[in-house]
Image (cartoon, rainbow, N blue to C red):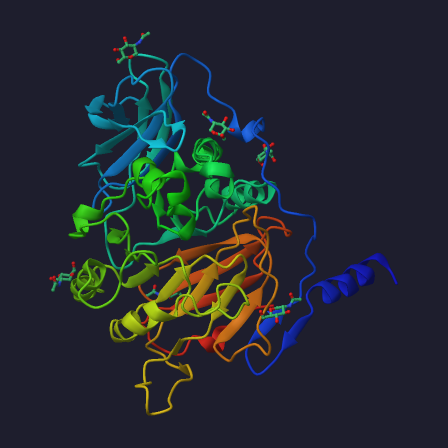
Length: 464
Ligand SMILES: *[C@@H]1O[C@H](CO)[C@@H](O)[C@H](O)[C@H]1NC(C)=O
Ligand SMILES: *[C@@H]1O[C@H](CO)[C@@H](O)[C@H](O)[C@H]1NC(C)=O
Ligand SMILES: *[C@@H]1O[C@H](CO)[C@@H](O)[C@H](O)[C@H]1NC(C)=O
Ligand SMILES: *[C@@H]1O[C@H](CO)[C@@H](O)[C@H](O)[C@H]1NC(C)=O
Ligand SMILES: *[C@@H]1O[C@H](CO)[C@@H](O)[C@H](O)[C@H]1NC(C)=O
Ligand SMILES: *[C@@H]1O[C@H](CO)[C@@H](O)[C@H](O)[C@H]1NC(C)=O
């Protein structure tokens, strides 16, 4: 065999796919090396130089419509200033937004001084510089605000979940940064630092995670979803306030969407309406989350934001033998709404692998009629599990067999995805596996908008 034929044969072996009555189960041969956390002395965790220098800088959308930004950072030596200075372009007039400082204790860990400042009334589609650490060592960053909300505004979202801080996490983040698709905002589906896997939930690993991810999240907003690794419920060491480290460190603009809790909320950005739900807060009938979602869905205006995207941590459709059916009770509560309001896509994490569903629903069952199997439904969302960020717990490799009909494609590899909205009818979606180059799309489909162009888009599945 020549070199070229050899490579082709290898490619065929690597991309072998098992086809069952369901979709495809990729048997891509991935590395089997153990997933380990980067040691504390790693380059990605280095502390910025200078007295009281701000670290763990991160930004997220700070209002409902994309004209606000919450800027957060931590100082270690003294509280310092909670204000952020910001200006347009290179030489715009400098303004200051005042923030607030919080601290918390977790068992025997004392946090640094955590600052949150919200910048408001930003111009759309504009590059802003900002500076934190005023009065001590300052550090400067920048971000670009989204275009004004509108139905045909192109916009590119990255999808990352269950990231952690292993060597694989670093590859996932690097691939996202190097992607030719150039994601503008990350939709993060929960499980950030995995500090809770350390003795006493060693919160030092929350600090290292903040320093590791700063290189992306200081420059573009990450939209936060709470996962089970954010709960940090540890009564054995006297820690009984759920989500304590997460909610002190990561703020979200929940009040802008009339939510009463930071764990469920919505934002509008470019041509998308994004709803974030909490798998780990009460969601039964009459609960605050239920009532909020019931009022939220009718507010979505598809003429303004054609794309309706939902984020949650625990997937409703998951055919791996990990966390199997954990999302089932929430599905029972809300799935009929998702079909009624024609949600385009639901992204979840939790399972450390990749999976994309067909458009299916399972809402006909009423205990006695026997209709308990998911059926193809063109009003239903596509469900995507993107919990493959690369955390220290390793890959979920054990799949249920045979592959159920609702599962279109699944593969146990680390990676990230891109949801690239082109206009009100079309979005190009792609998944990158870490073992390929950052530009390779190992799974990709065109999404046709459920409101504006609700034709069968399963016919354009081109996965391999
Ligand atoms: C917290 O307690 C653990 C276990 O007793 C110990 O190893 C660690 O050094 C302590 N950390 C601090 C900051 O005191
Ligand atoms: C650090 O900054 C704060 C806030 O501006 C200021 O009050 C403090 O004096 C500064 N500390 C030093 C050592 O310069
Ligand atoms: C993490 O990735 C970055 C960018 O690719 C690289 O510069 C750095 O050395 C990596 N660090 C570790 C510990 O793998
Ligand atoms: C929906 O958005 C469109 C476009 O911005 C606007 O003209 C229309 O009034 C909105 N509909 C409602 C019910 O608010
Ligand atoms: C995969 O999971 C199933 C169901 O939990 C279990 O019976 C089986 O032994 C597992 N297979 C492997 C290889 O771990
Ligand atoms: C929307 O984008 C798709 C994909 O780029 C393109 O084929 C289609 O023509 C666009 N529609 C309009 C109305 O421009």
